[in-house]
Every structure is written in structure tokens, then in C-alpha cells.
Image (cartoon, rainbow, N blue to C red; front, top):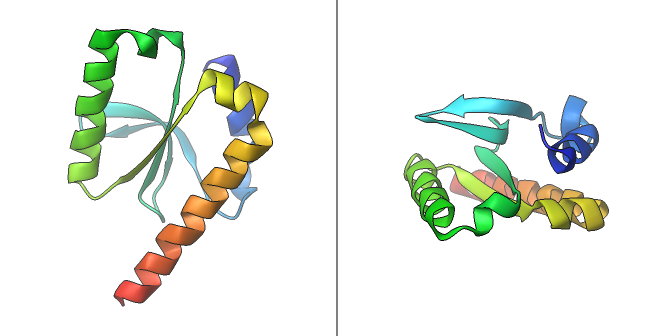
Length: 107
């Protein structure tokens, strides 16, 4: 894991924010940084290499593929995680609540 991924993992592991996440989890033909089965939520943390046009196209294809399986995808940059870890964790928590409300409304 990258430094940013390690920081984020330290805050979301062991159900610390109310949702159980797995790290480096295989989904379809991909391995995602973090995954919560209950929410069908993928979290990707992107480093500098993701600024490259070719990598951005691969990321877009990966995200579209994951979303085609009705997975929710959140993306953060390494910089966001390192400089605003509390804000990133809060964004994840809010997305979890939004997804749960949608799931309850669908029943």
C-alpha cells in the first residue's frame, strides 16, 4: 500500500466508521484499494501516476466496468488523503449514509 492508502486504512479498518472494509480486494478483473460489501462501495486512492492520460483512460474504463455491476466508486488523490484525512473519512461516512438511505428507500 502507498503511504496515503496506509493512512486511510488506519482510519477505516476494523469497522471504525461503522462500515467493514476490505483492502486490496479483487472485483471482476480488477483489484480495488478498498471495498465495503454491505454498501457495494469501492474506494480508490490515486497517486501521481494517475495524472497520465493513458492511466486516466484505464481508470475511467475500470470505473465504468465496476459501476456496471452496480458498485459505487469514490476516488481520492493521495494528496487529498494526506492533507485532509478527516475530510476524506467524513466523505466516506456521508456516502455510506447516502447509500444506506437509498437501499432502505428501495425496499
